[in-house]
Length: 167
Image 1 (cartoon, rainbow, N blue to C red):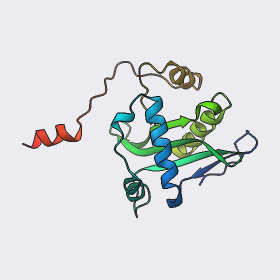
Image 2 (image 1 turned 60 degrees about the horizontal axis):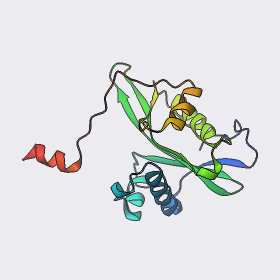
Image 3 (image 1 turned 30 degrees about the horizontal axis):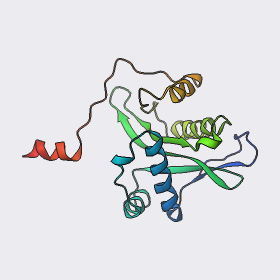
């Protein structure tokens, strides 16, 4: 865990998730899915969370922001790679702050903490995607000097489509 001393919000602490937090991770997954109007796509379960976040060599990581000992936000991230930079990057999969706690600096603190992790790991960049209707999130990220990549289009193959490719 990184030093939280750069955090300027009293009573706000950022902690790495531990195996005992598996149900809390799953709860936040459901909350962000509901916010993004994608609850119908969540198939993750507690066993998946335990197996993937807390295995011997995890490839996905989670941290929580606690305010007055209440989990108010979370971030899930993993490392990707840029051939052009020949460096790893930090990919932010989820950043979510509970609605009642937004606008208080918790999301910014989590993002700044992640940026320190990226720098400590010699990452060449940090990236994430935002739903095109999520204007509050886009404005928040732009206020932190993040730039949208309008010239790139995200493509996806689902598990079913991956299987179709093999047939």
